[in-house]
Image (cartoon, rainbow, N blue to C red; front, side, top):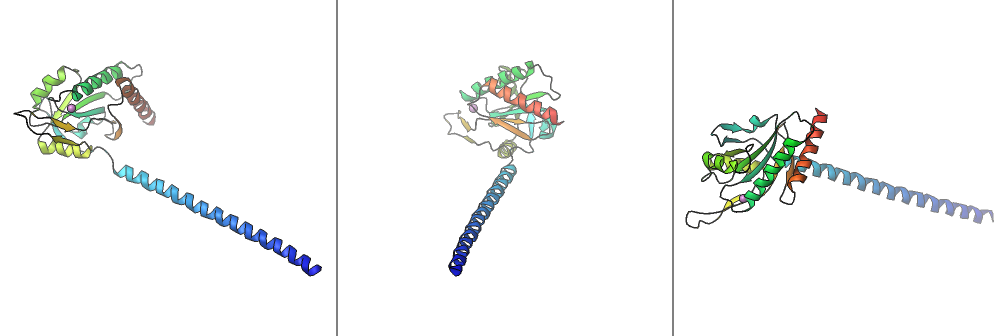
Length: 219
Ligand code: NI
């Protein structure tokens, strides 16, 4: 009887030990999985960080003044890439950009850094500074237009991951297929946010104001 009772106790103990062991092993595996997942997330974030949008550029303004990214430090800039011969999308987006500008100029909270809307031509062959000046006047007196040599424009578009491609010529005319996006750059020259066609002027202005307020708090 004693032996058998001992055996029973022993087997209960063995089962318990096995169970606790298994549970902690499962726990440990779960812990490792969590560690792995969090490390993967960290790696993904680092990869996204490295894929940063923006970078140096060297172009000329619509007033033929040389300009680089550094000239915009201290300002919030909202950059739109397009071309003056664009039949429908650029006019729509530039109207939106003008409305965003008006909304931001009207905001109650004063911002320490001015807001500057910027148009960058992806059709430097046809978009002379003079043509850009005339074109932008129709939308807003606050826009700055930028253009340059084909290489300079291509270089900037590469940094901003803006795809553009000249279509076939019909007579002298052609269209330039291009990405439709607005990029927000903060006063430190860092990319902050982007807005596509799905966002209206009010939504874009509101989002920008939030970024401005957050930036002001950090300063
Ligand atoms: Ni366009």
